Image 1 (cartoon, rainbow, N blue to C red):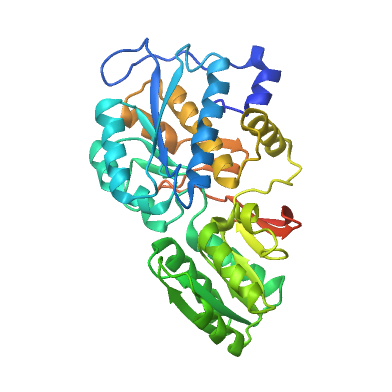
Image 2 (image 1 turned 30 degrees about the horizontal axis):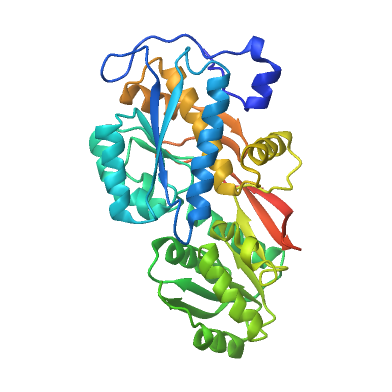
Amino acid sequence: MKKRLLSGVLAIMLIASAFTFAACGGGDANGDDSGPIKIGVFGPTTGPIAAYGSAVVNSVKLAVEEINENGGIDGRLIEVYDYDTKGDRAEAISTYNRLKDQDQVVAIIGGTISGETLAVKELAIEDNMPMLTPTATAADVTLDAPSIFRACFLDPYQAAAAARFSIDYLEAESVAILYNSDDAYSEGLAESYRSVFNDENLTVTNYIGYTANDVDFSTALTQIRNANPDVIFLPDYYDSVGQITTQIRDMGLEQICVGVDGWDSVEIDYAEQVEGYYFVNHFAKTDPDPTVQDFIAAFAAKYNQEPNALGALGYDATFVMAEAIQNAGSTDGQAIIDALSAIEYKGVTGTIRFDEQGDATQKDIAIIKIVDGKHELVEKLVVE
C-alpha cells in the first residue's frame, strides 16, 4: 500500500481536513505511548560556523511547531532537545550521550557538520539510534551505518557538479585549488574536484593546502597569481572563504572563484569580496518553487531573517523523521529505521529518498551566483 507523504505545512494548512497523521500503535522504548515524542538535534550554534548550527536548530523547531499545530503524530506532540556542539567532536559525543541517556530521545536530527557527525557515528550504530543528518556531506558518514541517514547530497557529487560547471559554463581549462588540509570536508572536496579536471586532461596549476589556523594566504595566492589559472576553487566554510577572498581582492587576482555549500552565508559579512563568484548549494533562495518560497516566508516571519540552505535541509529532515515515525507505527528504533528506508518526501530541497546506504539519491544541486549580496540561481542540476 502506498504510504501517504507528509507535505509542507502550508499545504497541510490548506488541506488540513484531508490530512492527519495516521493513528498508529506501539510506543516508545519505555512503553509510554501517550507522552510527547522526543527528538534531539545538535550542531554548532556558537563559534565561527554558528550560522549553520543555528539555522538547522531553528528550522527543526519551526517544522516541529508546524507539525504540533496540526495535531502532532497520532495526537502526540513532538518535543525537541537541542544542544550546541561548538563544532567540536568531543562536545558532539557528550551531546549524543546526553540526548540518549538523559533526554531519552527516540531519534536524532544531526549532526550539522561532517566532523561532529563522524564523531558520534559508532555510538549511533551501537545503539541502533535512528539518526538523520540534514547537512553532513562527507561520504563516510553513512558508510556501514545502518541507523544513519542523510538528507543532503554527498561531497563527491557537489565537487563534481562544481567542476563540471567550471568546465562547461565558465569554460575553464585550468584551475588552482586552495583547500584546508586540516579538514576532511575541504580536503575531500578538493580531491573530487581535481579528479574531474584530471579525467578531462585539463590543468590543475596549483593544489595548495593550508591549516585551520592560517590567516595569511599571500604566499599561496602569489603562487596562484604566477600560474594564472582560469578559475580558483575554494572548498571551505564561509568564515575561511571570506578571509581568503578578501586577500584575493586585495592582491588584485581577477580569476573567478568557485565554491561549495560551505560558502552559504558568506555574503552576510563578505558581500563585496565574493561579488560575481559562484558556488553549489542545496537550494536557491530565488527559486520560484512555491515550496521553497513558502518555507522562506515562514522562517522569516518567525526569526526575522532569511534561512540558509542548511536551514532548509533541517526543515526537510524534520518532516522526513516525523513521517517515518508515523509510518513506523512505533517509536521503536528499528521500526523508525525501516520506515526511513522506505520514505519518499518532496521538500524544500527537492525529493528525498534513500538508497541502501542511507544516502539521499537524485538530489537537486543549485548553482548560485552572488550578485549585490544576494543569491542568483544560475541553474539547477540533479545528482544521479
